[in-house]
Picture 1: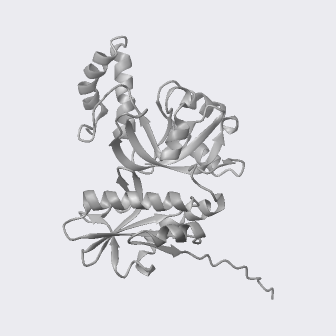
Picture 2: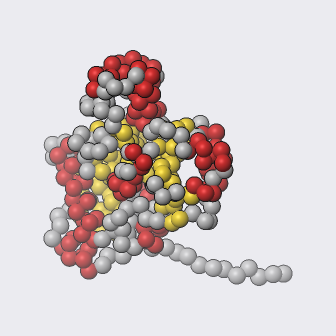
Picture 3: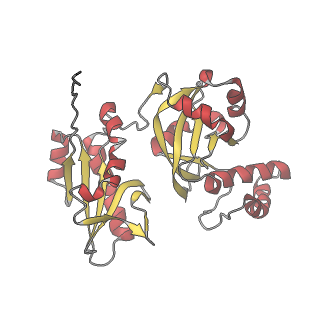
Length: 310
């Protein structure tokens, strides 16, 4: 069952903008260690271990307060499942909306060190449009608040035409292109065999499960990671998503560097593909001095057919 949760990103939502830009939610609670292999299925087991650790760093807190903090930390790191919906206030009466799209990762030295990947929508819902009950629940104290009981209302609000439309990535230059390419990734995944890549590559799998979509790297999620059928090449695919050309070229180079250093086996080469609506002059110039990166343009076939009446 899909769950819905209100997540407060820092006091008063002070870190919401950087979370949306970076594609994550996060928390801290002064637990300064990587929890990657320390997240049991039960929050009770997690609390049993980490309440004493939390209290050691925050002796001003009660055990009840420590239990609440550790429970909320576990919820973000482990309790929320893929595709669960999160809404986060922006401090100005509106809520960003996203869904969980990746597992836990640790980001030491940042504002919110314990993180989960989130795919943010490009719309926000207004608090004034919520029912009184939902407003009351989303205004509850604490980092996390389960609002699954309002799932029907939240879905209706998400689909409302009165939402504020924005682009969640500040690097985006073309919001229309961004909106179209939001759906391109899923189209490529579902129609992989019919793409120019399907003949020679398979989307990366492990233990029979596809893990190559939004593959986590240390510089962000790779849109699509694929492996050639002969096993000799790893392919990094990045959708332009309306971003400036120098930004997307730099990003795919960072992803390719990560794949080369961390994933590629001896003898494997790494190639990259950028997919966008069109290649402007800046992109062409950048690619002319870039090794192993190609550009593919996508095309939209849209037409209107008048129905004739009998």
